[in-house]
Image (cartoon, rainbow, N blue to C red; front, side, top):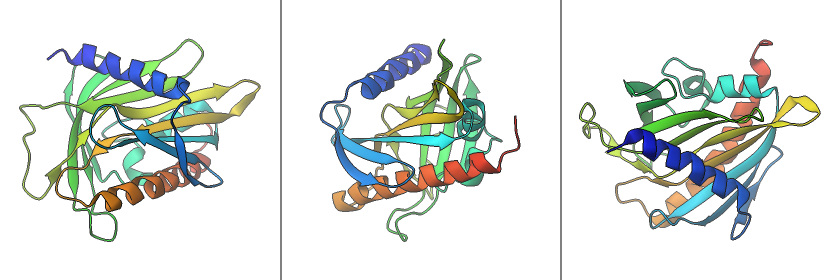
Length: 211
């Protein structure tokens, strides 16, 4: 499998989600974010889009978001318990394992996900993380975790012209959580967890010293 090609396809896919306004239905709003969904074309579930403005420069926001084994993400993101690098393919592309904790008051057991992740920077200063599921010989399914599968997902940090201390953040989640979860549990979990994601991201950026 050509991991580089797969990762670059995800980046194109996320940009198309960001540009295509059709079919999205708003399911949750807060001061920090608007969460929308539409049926996924990748698997029998939904793709969720979060869109919000974070107070902080793109550099600060990215420092909190970037997928790094010893990064800040595991400290503030309640849905990331552990983040492990399995293989560095190029400077910008890696294969990683993400471990998530028990969620939804214990209904959702701990999960793990193995993804190829591309970090991509654009000429206008936009920076993105782009991920999708892969298999890796160094990380077969493990006892104690339900193996879930991320379909094209990630975050896009977009500079706001004339406002260097604000960043527009798009996030996309389309995850097959695996196991035998009722659809209603899944459908209620993502909008609320994404709202919390933006709230915690905003707090984490605010707590960073100036970069």
